[in-house]
Image (cartoon, rainbow, N blue to C red; front, side, top):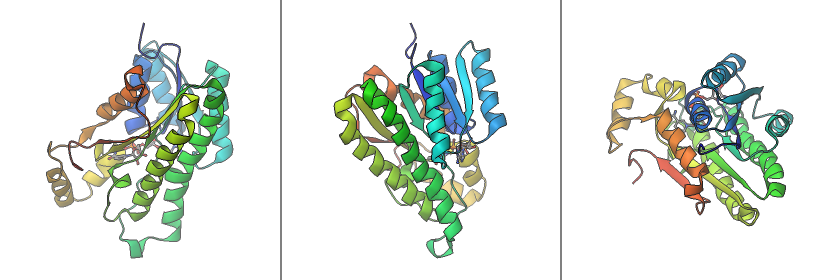
Length: 251
Ligand SMILES: NC(=O)c1ccc[n+]([C@@H]2O[C@H](COP(=O)([O-])OP(=O)(O)OC[C@H]3O[C@@H](n4cnc5c(N)ncnc54)[C@H](O)[C@@H]3O)[C@@H](O)[C@H]2O)c1
Protein backbone atom coordinates (compact mmCIF):
# COMPACT_ATOMS: atom_id res chain seq x y z
CA UNK A 1 0.00 0.00 0.00
CA UNK A 2 1.52 3.31 -1.06
CA UNK A 3 1.05 6.62 0.79
CA UNK A 4 -1.47 8.18 -1.64
CA UNK A 5 -3.13 5.10 -3.18
CA UNK A 6 -6.60 5.85 -4.61
CA UNK A 7 -6.20 9.56 -3.93
CA UNK A 8 -6.37 12.16 -6.68
CA UNK A 9 -4.36 15.32 -6.90
CA UNK A 10 -4.26 18.37 -9.16
CA UNK A 11 -0.95 20.18 -9.51
CA UNK A 12 -0.88 23.47 -11.42
CA UNK A 13 2.32 24.53 -13.13
CA UNK A 14 3.24 20.84 -13.22
CA UNK A 15 5.09 21.02 -16.53
CA UNK A 16 8.29 22.35 -14.99
CA UNK A 17 10.34 22.88 -11.84
CA UNK A 18 8.64 22.43 -8.46
CA UNK A 19 5.30 21.38 -10.00
CA UNK A 20 6.94 18.71 -12.14
CA UNK A 21 8.96 17.31 -9.21
CA UNK A 22 5.75 17.27 -7.14
CA UNK A 23 3.78 15.46 -9.86
CA UNK A 24 6.49 12.77 -10.12
CA UNK A 25 6.71 12.46 -6.31
CA UNK A 26 2.96 11.94 -5.84
CA UNK A 27 2.77 9.51 -8.78
CA UNK A 28 5.62 7.50 -7.22
CA UNK A 29 3.56 7.37 -3.99
CA UNK A 30 0.49 5.98 -5.78
CA UNK A 31 -1.66 9.09 -6.39
CA UNK A 32 -3.73 9.66 -9.53
CA UNK A 33 -2.27 12.90 -10.87
CA UNK A 34 -3.87 15.65 -12.90
CA UNK A 35 -0.94 17.45 -14.47
CA UNK A 36 -1.99 21.00 -15.24
CA UNK A 37 0.02 23.67 -17.02
CA UNK A 38 -0.40 26.38 -19.63
CA UNK A 39 2.45 24.77 -21.58
CA UNK A 40 1.10 21.72 -23.46
CA UNK A 41 4.31 19.96 -24.55
CA UNK A 42 5.86 20.12 -21.07
CA UNK A 43 2.65 18.88 -19.44
CA UNK A 44 2.39 15.94 -21.82
CA UNK A 45 6.04 15.02 -21.12
CA UNK A 46 5.32 14.81 -17.40
CA UNK A 47 2.29 12.57 -18.04
CA UNK A 48 4.46 10.32 -20.25
CA UNK A 49 7.11 10.11 -17.51
CA UNK A 50 4.45 9.12 -14.93
CA UNK A 51 2.97 6.49 -17.24
CA UNK A 52 6.46 5.11 -17.89
CA UNK A 53 6.78 4.63 -14.10
CA UNK A 54 3.49 2.68 -14.12
CA UNK A 55 1.51 5.55 -12.61
CA UNK A 56 -1.80 7.17 -13.60
CA UNK A 57 -1.92 10.75 -14.92
CA UNK A 58 -3.84 13.01 -17.29
CA UNK A 59 -2.89 16.39 -18.67
CA UNK A 60 -5.33 19.31 -18.63
CA UNK A 61 -4.11 22.52 -20.22
CA UNK A 62 -5.05 25.41 -17.94
CA UNK A 63 -4.30 29.07 -17.68
CA UNK A 64 -4.87 29.61 -13.94
CA UNK A 65 -5.72 33.26 -14.61
CA UNK A 66 -8.84 32.12 -16.49
CA UNK A 67 -11.66 31.07 -14.16
CA UNK A 68 -13.53 28.98 -16.77
CA UNK A 69 -10.39 26.96 -17.45
CA UNK A 70 -9.83 26.43 -13.72
CA UNK A 71 -13.42 25.23 -13.21
CA UNK A 72 -12.95 22.80 -16.12
CA UNK A 73 -9.67 21.58 -14.61
CA UNK A 74 -11.37 20.60 -11.37
CA UNK A 75 -14.30 18.99 -13.21
CA UNK A 76 -11.85 16.96 -15.32
CA UNK A 77 -10.22 15.60 -12.16
CA UNK A 78 -13.59 14.49 -10.79
CA UNK A 79 -14.52 13.06 -14.21
CA UNK A 80 -11.31 11.00 -14.49
CA UNK A 81 -10.70 10.00 -10.89
CA UNK A 82 -14.09 10.39 -9.13
CA UNK A 83 -13.01 12.95 -6.52
CA UNK A 84 -10.43 15.60 -5.66
CA UNK A 85 -8.38 14.89 -2.55
CA UNK A 86 -5.46 17.29 -2.92
CA UNK A 87 -4.90 20.51 -4.85
CA UNK A 88 -1.46 22.06 -5.21
CA UNK A 89 -1.75 25.64 -6.43
CA UNK A 90 1.75 26.09 -7.68
CA UNK A 91 1.67 27.83 -11.09
CA UNK A 92 3.39 31.18 -10.94
CA UNK A 93 5.66 33.64 -12.67
CA UNK A 94 8.49 35.79 -11.34
CA UNK A 95 8.55 38.76 -13.70
CA UNK A 96 11.51 41.00 -14.45
CA UNK A 97 13.57 42.46 -11.61
CA UNK A 98 12.42 46.08 -11.20
CA UNK A 99 12.26 48.68 -8.46
CA UNK A 100 8.74 49.86 -7.55
CA UNK A 101 8.89 53.06 -9.60
CA UNK A 102 9.74 51.01 -12.71
CA UNK A 103 6.87 48.50 -12.43
CA UNK A 104 4.35 49.04 -15.25
CA UNK A 105 0.61 48.42 -14.97
CA UNK A 106 1.10 45.52 -17.36
CA UNK A 107 3.82 43.92 -15.14
CA UNK A 108 1.64 44.35 -12.06
CA UNK A 109 -1.59 43.06 -13.63
CA UNK A 110 0.05 39.98 -15.13
CA UNK A 111 1.74 38.90 -11.89
CA UNK A 112 -1.35 39.52 -9.78
CA UNK A 113 -3.60 37.72 -12.32
CA UNK A 114 -1.50 34.55 -12.32
CA UNK A 115 0.07 34.39 -8.84
CA UNK A 116 -2.79 35.82 -6.78
CA UNK A 117 -6.10 35.66 -8.66
CA UNK A 118 -5.04 32.30 -10.14
CA UNK A 119 -4.59 30.83 -6.66
CA UNK A 120 -7.96 32.30 -5.62
CA UNK A 121 -9.73 30.70 -8.63
CA UNK A 122 -8.04 27.35 -7.92
CA UNK A 123 -8.86 27.40 -4.20
CA UNK A 124 -12.48 28.37 -4.84
CA UNK A 125 -13.01 25.62 -7.43
CA UNK A 126 -11.31 22.99 -5.24
CA UNK A 127 -13.21 23.99 -2.09
CA UNK A 128 -16.55 23.64 -3.89
CA UNK A 129 -15.72 19.94 -4.45
CA UNK A 130 -13.94 19.30 -1.15
CA UNK A 131 -16.62 20.85 1.10
CA UNK A 132 -19.34 18.24 0.34
CA UNK A 133 -16.66 15.50 0.48
CA UNK A 134 -15.80 16.82 3.98
CA UNK A 135 -12.19 16.04 3.22
CA UNK A 136 -9.39 17.68 1.31
CA UNK A 137 -5.95 19.19 1.42
CA UNK A 138 -4.76 22.32 -0.34
CA UNK A 139 -1.16 23.48 -0.56
CA UNK A 140 -0.42 26.87 -2.10
CA UNK A 141 3.05 27.74 -3.33
CA UNK A 142 3.93 31.12 -1.84
CA UNK A 143 7.58 32.10 -1.29
CA UNK A 144 9.87 33.67 1.28
CA UNK A 145 8.74 36.78 -0.65
CA UNK A 146 5.31 36.08 0.89
CA UNK A 147 6.56 36.61 4.44
CA UNK A 148 9.36 39.14 3.99
CA UNK A 149 10.68 41.69 1.55
CA UNK A 150 11.88 40.86 -1.96
CA UNK A 151 13.92 43.69 -3.44
CA UNK A 152 13.09 44.44 -7.09
CA UNK A 153 10.14 42.01 -6.93
CA UNK A 154 7.40 44.29 -5.56
CA UNK A 155 4.48 42.82 -7.53
CA UNK A 156 5.71 39.29 -6.87
CA UNK A 157 6.02 39.97 -3.11
CA UNK A 158 2.50 41.49 -3.09
CA UNK A 159 1.07 38.41 -4.83
CA UNK A 160 2.82 35.95 -2.52
CA UNK A 161 1.80 37.84 0.65
CA UNK A 162 -1.77 37.56 -0.68
CA UNK A 163 -1.31 33.80 -1.12
CA UNK A 164 -0.29 33.50 2.54
CA UNK A 165 -3.31 35.60 3.61
CA UNK A 166 -5.74 33.54 1.53
CA UNK A 167 -4.21 30.32 2.89
CA UNK A 168 -4.63 31.29 6.54
CA UNK A 169 -8.17 32.56 6.01
CA UNK A 170 -9.34 29.47 4.11
CA UNK A 171 -7.69 27.22 6.73
CA UNK A 172 -9.79 28.83 9.45
CA UNK A 173 -13.00 28.85 7.37
CA UNK A 174 -12.81 25.22 6.19
CA UNK A 175 -11.25 23.36 9.16
CA UNK A 176 -14.76 22.31 10.22
CA UNK A 177 -15.21 20.54 6.88
CA UNK A 178 -12.09 18.39 7.33
CA UNK A 179 -10.13 20.48 4.83
CA UNK A 180 -6.56 21.55 5.60
CA UNK A 181 -4.98 24.52 3.80
CA UNK A 182 -1.29 25.34 4.02
CA UNK A 183 1.27 27.37 2.09
CA UNK A 184 4.91 26.70 1.40
CA UNK A 185 7.47 29.47 1.29
CA UNK A 186 10.61 28.44 -0.56
CA UNK A 187 13.73 30.54 -1.03
CA UNK A 188 15.58 30.18 -4.34
CA UNK A 189 15.04 26.69 -5.73
CA UNK A 190 16.96 25.30 -8.69
CA UNK A 191 14.24 25.30 -11.36
CA UNK A 192 13.99 27.17 -14.67
CA UNK A 193 12.51 30.14 -12.71
CA UNK A 194 15.10 29.99 -9.93
CA UNK A 195 17.94 29.50 -12.44
CA UNK A 196 16.88 32.59 -14.38
CA UNK A 197 17.55 34.70 -11.26
CA UNK A 198 20.67 32.79 -10.25
CA UNK A 199 22.25 33.26 -13.67
CA UNK A 200 21.17 36.88 -14.12
CA UNK A 201 23.91 38.32 -11.88
CA UNK A 202 26.68 36.22 -10.24
CA UNK A 203 27.27 38.89 -7.55
CA UNK A 204 23.60 38.86 -6.48
CA UNK A 205 23.59 35.06 -6.61
CA UNK A 206 26.52 34.86 -4.19
CA UNK A 207 24.97 37.53 -1.98
CA UNK A 208 21.68 35.60 -1.71
CA UNK A 209 23.53 32.33 -1.04
CA UNK A 210 25.38 33.98 1.84
CA UNK A 211 22.03 34.84 3.46
CA UNK A 212 21.13 31.13 3.57
CA UNK A 213 22.73 29.42 6.60
CA UNK A 214 22.93 26.14 4.64
CA UNK A 215 24.90 28.04 1.94
CA UNK A 216 23.07 26.47 -0.98
CA UNK A 217 19.88 26.80 -3.00
CA UNK A 218 17.08 24.26 -2.69
CA UNK A 219 16.21 21.34 -4.95
CA UNK A 220 12.71 20.97 -6.45
CA UNK A 221 12.50 17.48 -4.93
CA UNK A 222 13.02 18.90 -1.43
CA UNK A 223 9.98 21.13 -1.98
CA UNK A 224 7.97 18.19 -3.39
CA UNK A 225 8.72 16.13 -0.27
CA UNK A 226 7.50 18.93 2.01
CA UNK A 227 4.27 19.16 0.01
CA UNK A 228 4.00 15.37 0.29
CA UNK A 229 4.33 15.56 4.07
CA UNK A 230 1.73 18.36 4.31
CA UNK A 231 -0.74 16.21 2.33
CA UNK A 232 -0.05 13.06 4.36
CA UNK A 233 -1.77 11.80 7.51
CA UNK A 234 1.44 12.67 9.40
CA UNK A 235 0.38 16.32 9.07
CA UNK A 236 -3.26 15.67 10.10
CA UNK A 237 -3.30 18.50 12.72
CA UNK A 238 -1.40 21.01 10.59
CA UNK A 239 -3.40 23.78 8.92
CA UNK A 240 -3.04 27.50 8.26
CA UNK A 241 0.75 27.39 8.09
CA UNK A 242 3.14 29.19 5.79
CA UNK A 243 6.08 26.81 6.00
CA UNK A 244 9.51 28.11 5.06
CA UNK A 245 11.68 25.86 2.91
CA UNK A 246 14.74 28.06 2.99
CA UNK A 247 17.78 26.43 4.60
CA UNK A 248 17.26 28.69 7.62
CA UNK A 249 17.25 31.96 5.64
CA UNK A 250 14.34 33.68 7.42
CA UNK A 251 15.21 32.31 10.88
N1 LIG B 1 12.20 28.57 -8.09
C1 LIG B 1 12.22 29.40 -7.08
O1 LIG B 1 13.28 29.92 -6.71
C2 LIG B 1 10.95 29.71 -6.32
C3 LIG B 1 11.07 30.25 -5.02
C4 LIG B 1 9.91 30.53 -4.30
C5 LIG B 1 8.67 30.28 -4.87
N2 LIG B 1 8.59 29.77 -6.13
C6 LIG B 1 7.26 29.54 -6.68
O2 LIG B 1 7.15 28.19 -7.06
C7 LIG B 1 6.18 28.05 -8.10
C8 LIG B 1 6.77 27.19 -9.19
O3 LIG B 1 7.90 27.85 -9.71
P1 LIG B 1 9.11 27.08 -10.42
O4 LIG B 1 10.36 27.59 -9.82
O5 LIG B 1 8.86 25.62 -10.48
O6 LIG B 1 9.01 27.77 -11.87
P2 LIG B 1 8.98 27.17 -13.34
O7 LIG B 1 9.03 28.36 -14.22
O8 LIG B 1 9.97 26.09 -13.49
O9 LIG B 1 7.52 26.51 -13.41
C9 LIG B 1 6.35 27.28 -13.40
C10 LIG B 1 5.31 26.57 -14.24
O10 LIG B 1 4.10 27.34 -14.18
C11 LIG B 1 3.55 27.39 -15.48
N3 LIG B 1 2.71 28.58 -15.64
C12 LIG B 1 3.11 29.87 -15.78
N4 LIG B 1 2.04 30.66 -15.95
C13 LIG B 1 0.95 29.86 -15.90
C14 LIG B 1 -0.44 30.09 -15.99
N5 LIG B 1 -0.94 31.32 -16.22
N6 LIG B 1 -1.28 29.04 -15.88
C15 LIG B 1 -0.80 27.80 -15.68
N7 LIG B 1 0.50 27.51 -15.60
C16 LIG B 1 1.37 28.53 -15.70
C17 LIG B 1 4.75 27.41 -16.42
O11 LIG B 1 4.39 26.98 -17.74
C18 LIG B 1 5.69 26.45 -15.72
O12 LIG B 1 5.51 25.13 -16.16
C19 LIG B 1 5.81 29.47 -8.51
O13 LIG B 1 4.59 29.83 -7.91
C20 LIG B 1 6.93 30.31 -7.95
O14 LIG B 1 6.55 31.62 -7.70
C21 LIG B 1 9.70 29.47 -6.86
